[in-house]
Amino acid sequence: MRRLLIATALMLAAPLVAAQAYKWTDANGTVHYSDAPPAQGTKYSKVTTTGTVEPLAEPAPAKSSETSTQAKPSTPQQSLPVADTPENRTKLCANLKTNLDALKGGGPVVMEQNGQQKLLDADQRQQQQATSQAQYQQYCSGN
Picture 1 (cartoon, one colour):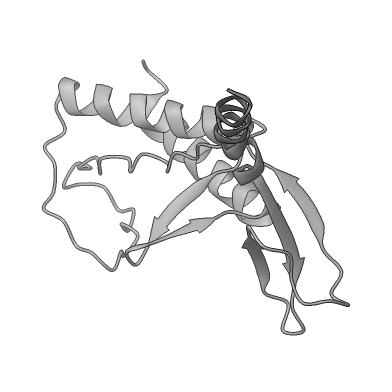
Picture 2 (cartoon, rainbow, N blue to C red):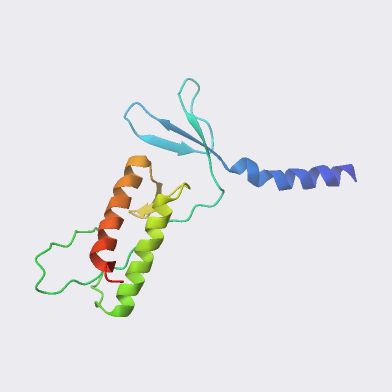
């Protein structure tokens, strides 16, 4: 009976242990995140996570009018243009709003870049927030 209680307690505590992460910067200035501490002698900080990290939703590209003189940002993965309909505009604005809420929140933010998920640091988060806010103002100001 005792073993069953101990085993149950260990199984319930396992997810709590997995929520610990470590953050450190290497000699090249690259920020690293890991669930294991870095090599001894490396300065690091402990990061507490909620256990679940959801990637940001990709905003659907809105098609601008043909008379627009603004250049579209080039992306590595070229997708077909999306018609500028009220339904697509609504979807774009909803995605942008979700992204802004996630970026303004206190939890970790993960983005997918080149097929790999990457945890954003404070500077990247601020830059992405500014970009999303500008897109929201451009495409959703009338909504």
